Length: 636
Image (cartoon, rainbow, N blue to C red; front, side, top):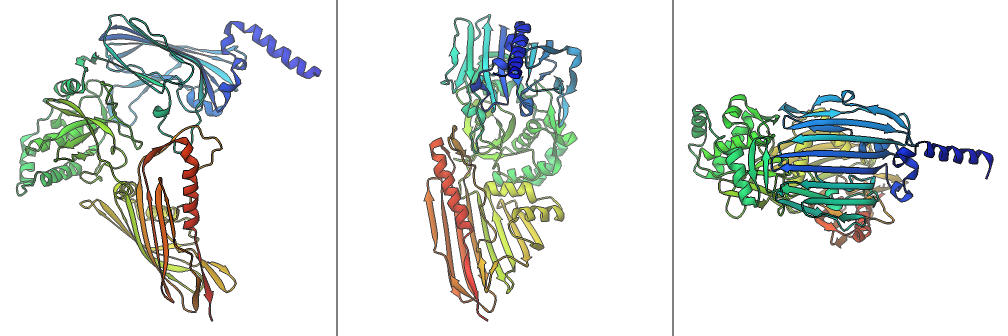
């Protein structure tokens, strides 16, 4: 060992002794396996909930995290939310260097107080937050808070592993239940080694030790579905100043209706007269509902409002009618009131709104969800209405509220139902095109695209109500593999009744085919190539999910230039796996005309990690097939 290395080791050892009182805060004691795939390490996180009564609890948290690198800053979490019902009793923080030496002590006055309203027009929510810029890595951040609240409908959840790329040295979760309040405790993925349930009597207590970081992988399920989690809900609670009961969904729904929704549906007489006139000539209740839905879309706009019994009570329907805006709760309640004025049954429905599929936990009764939509019973299949958008057609819910368990609230009680599932065939994109090749290898072409289901929704958000310049930019990106093409015309029709978008485009390019002497290589899949491959993993750790299937169908007539002949056509292809089916064919109609047909159906599903290699192989074969070319010979 040379002298220089000896000095470095002596310096580290001396530093560790010097700050032995903060030894747990040194970065050098972190086990190597906890640094693997980690940008930060939770050294210790203790959550203690003192449940004094069904309507009073104190929450104490001490979180010690070592940030290993710049990417780990996202795990600092140096903030706490509060509102009129949550009182911050204390808040403080300390920063330590890699050796455990205290660098900075942060008091309450150092935290900035912000409105937490974001895009909300009105909100009681606020946040105390610290904007800390480190001077070096690694460093350790200690964050302590204590809050008291008389609103007990929501209990902190416990994630022993809090996020991807974040490992945990120690974590604990305690609920001290002083009055033996009935609590429902539900655990997920607790089979992980290092997690222990040491609860006894009126003490709920879980501990975790040495949990390695989870590395995010392509197509991974939502973090909640793969990470350990404890959720707790009380049978009896208070939401702001309203006492609640949640032993069953039926009871909970009845409480929700009676305390949050009932008597908030009065509509001014002038508006009722308008609605009566609007639907006067219509007998079918669903057709009436369509007219009323369009009336709401034309009259109102969405603005988030987080007031009224903890942000869970909708604004009065009469107020929405007056101001012509509201959040999801208010606009849903307003639409429901208008429908009920015409004796059309409709129910307020709470759910998790997210592009990722997320269910209300049906066997865990309590406050859940972040969004509200409307349910109209319609025989065997309900109609679901998204009331916050001016663009979404009647009954269309793809991509944000589809295919999930939701809580339907009726005067008689609550019940769990499942929203509409769109099949692969319903999530379609169908294309027909005429492609006229020229003697230089370029082409001009006309294409018609029709989309439905989730693919309709994608296009609704991307190309409806944007100007021509942005439309051109969208298609330039969409067909980026076509070199130097220009768009002559764009026509887009949004058929809200059929829930189908039709795109008609005329495009041209001076050079498409690849020249090889007197030959051209022509890729017949001009407009719909599946080029991106999922990343390769030598040892994948997580399962993967295809949340929504889809169906693409393409048919192109390719007209060949004079003076060229077809040397050969590739064989037809069919690839069939449990992930989906691909078909491709080329048919020579005559010496100057070829018909290219392609279809791809991808199946939704939850798949094991062992299936990923086969899925990637399937995708690789698709990409190769979509690049298939045929040869044109120059004959004169």
